[in-house]
Amino acid sequence: MRKKITVIGAGFVGEHVAMGLAVKEMGDVVLLDILEGIPQGKGLDLFESSPVAGFDSSVFGTNSYEDTRGSAVVVITAGIARKPGMSRDDLQMTNADIVRSSAENVKRFSPEAIVVVVSNPLDVMCTVAKRITGFPRQRVVGMAGILDTARFRSFIAMELRVSVESVQALVLGGHGDSMVPLPRLATVGGIPLLELLPPDRIDALVQRTAGGGGEIVALLKTGSAYHAPAASVVEMVESILHDKKKVLPCAAWLEGEYGISGTFVGVPVLLGAQGIERIFELKLLPQEIEALRTSAAHVREQQEKLGM
Image 1 (cartoon, helix red, strand yellow):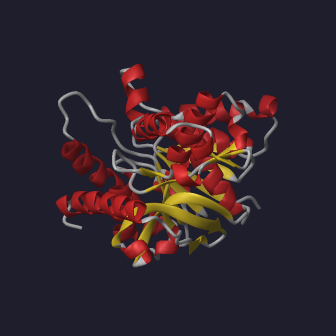
Image 2: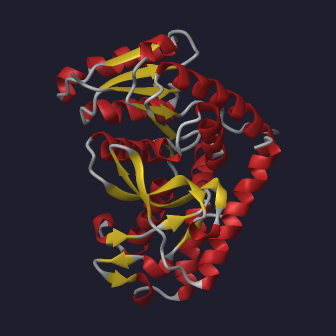
């Protein structure tokens, strides 16, 4: 019997997550949204692609959490995008209410699930999901580090005109302007990035990575990124359900690691069947650990605005 995976939120990110999971036959996918007809229509459309795309996973759209009962993994993408005139605090308050409701229903219908949070502001929404579900920190994880690292890798490959597959990199910290790309650890075919580019070009790539999401929003004008975020989620779910034990940068609840406690921050973790099975503590340089702790402090400030 295939496992059930629920995707909460049938927007662009949610539908692309559902598609990626179905095409890779991770399990049977439930696509849930509060808007009547939207998840049903998108779910049916995705399933009707299965004979052509060659997958046997079912995709089912619904407005009822009852249909999500017993999910092994729940992906929370629900939330609104920032609109003109809306402050980041306004966005946070609105999405916190949405994630809070989602988390309550996850706890009720899928109490053994592993929760992957995608809603923004990412790190704070992870805290909401963890507090409301009461799940242990192993079973609540945020998608951001994979996305930020993918952007860093992409920009390095573009700069050097090499295959993205030859580029390895790592981005830590909160998902926002205070994220912490680590050029010192980036390599291209095993060659340190620091030997391939001058400092000014590396700094430019770091800055572009930090503003990667905003760059896409500015280009689209009426939306935000969804292909790369969805691909990042699919990699996480695959590592969990197939117990691949990949080491990936994800938002994890820290309890003293890196000298940080009481908040979600992007760090390297081992993702397996139990969720976050290990948090890796890198030996960072003084300026790197300071940047990471500063990023965590920014996340904590936002948490406190929600009384968390």
